Structures are given as C-alpha cells and as structure tokens.
Amino acid sequence: MTLSPEQLQSFQDKGYVICPDLFSRDEMTVLNDALQVIYADHLERPEVSREKGSAAPRMIFGADQFSPAFARLARHPRWIKPAQQILGTEVYIHQLRINPKMAFEGEAFWWHQDFATWHFEDGMPTSNALMIAVFMDDILQINGPLMVIPGSHKYGEVPERVPNQDKTGYTIMDVQRDTVKELVDEGGIEALTGRSGSVMFMHCNLLHASAGNVTPRPRSVVYINANSVANEPTTKKRARYHCNPDATPLEPLVDNCLATA
Image (cartoon, rainbow, N blue to C red; front, side, top):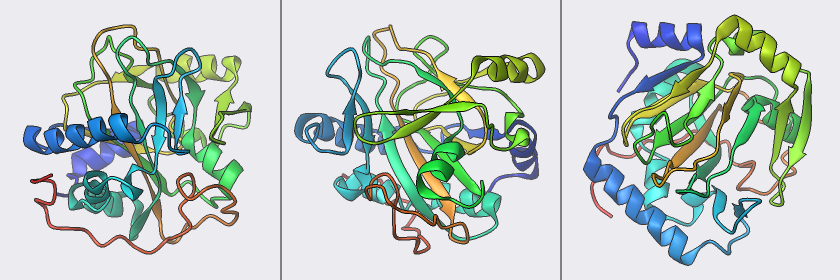
C-alpha cells in the first residue's frame, strides 16, 4: 500500500487524504470486538478519560499496550508504508488513542492542532508527524465527524491558542475564535466522512475540531499519531501512553495480521 501521486498532492494541498476501505469489514469486526472488550474490562484504567457530562469514555490512550488486536494494528503495513512515504523516514508511534464518540454521549472538541500539543508538552522539534485516523464506524455528516480547515497546515503552528488540560493530563491547545474565523473565511470547512475501515492521513498542523454526537449512531475513531524517527521529542515528561519514549522504527507485520482475533 502506497499513496498515488494524486493522493500525495491532495495531502500537500489540503493537509489530508482519505483512503476508503483500507481495512475490510472482517478486519474491522476484529477491532470492534476488541473495543467492546476494552469497554467491558478496561475503562477504569488511568489511560481512560471520561466525558465532562457523563461517565462515557472520551479518550482511551495506549490501547496498543494492553489490547492484542490494537497492538497488531499499531504495526500494520497498510498505514506504516504510506506514513513512511509522506514523512520520508522510518516511523514510530508517538501516541495511539481511541475517541469513542459514543451514541448520544460523545462531546465536542474545540479547534486545535495536534502538533501544538506535542510541541508544548513533549518538546517535539518539528511538525514532521502525522495524525492517522482509522474509522471504526461509518462516519456520517450527522454523528460528529472530524471537521478540518483545508490548507490551514500551511500556516504552521498557530500562536493564538490557550492550553486546555483534561484529568488524564492531556492538553488540547484551543485556538482563539478570531483566528479560526480568519482561516475558515479563507479555506472553508470540510467534514471528513467515510465507511468503517477507511483511513485518513492528516498533517499534524491541520486545524480541526468536531461537534458532539447527539445521534444513536456511534462514531469511534482510532488515532495513530505517527512521528518520524528523526523528530524525537526532547522532553518526554508525560506518561508513556501520552508520549512514547521508545522511538525505535516500527517493523511492519504481515498484511493479514488482523485476519484473526
């Protein structure tokens, strides 16, 4: 799996590219079954944060460290090879997190850039890193899809922001409204939708947000935050599930590694 010249150009122009149906329905069944095990057995772990207005999980960090299925996803060649292609180096996982956006319970995320957090918290030197989204569910216009401002990655790290930290110690750098408006006036807003099994590769400086999910349809996404091995953070003060201290290049597994539970 490699990206075509047209896909690479889309990434350069818009700051993201979506690969539909990169994983099969059977492979997604394996991952969704593993997610149900996490819901049943692991929600009291320190890696899990809750929604402000309910006990529903908001973020599940580091599932690759305690779930065999997500550990296999973390070394899957179908995302590793395109990530290497985009970044131009070998890669490792800086952070892996699941955002469940559960039916009726998933709350909103304000406009932010992921690199701003990694730079602020971990001392990541440059933005040569990716946010890779594996769509666990069918993501629709109605159930809280990720929204992006196309081309906003070209402005670099936005300085007009305020740190917003949750109880797990994860900080989102909320961008100020006037700056969001200026960027939207220029680039517009696109909602990133697709079927379960689709994968989105996104520049870590692309400004993005998501609305709450008030529908009965869940919108779960696995975010694999891949970093170049030449871009290792300098601080590494956070927990391992927020900032992986091991920058060893990933060795991909075989292509059918998700075929069985």
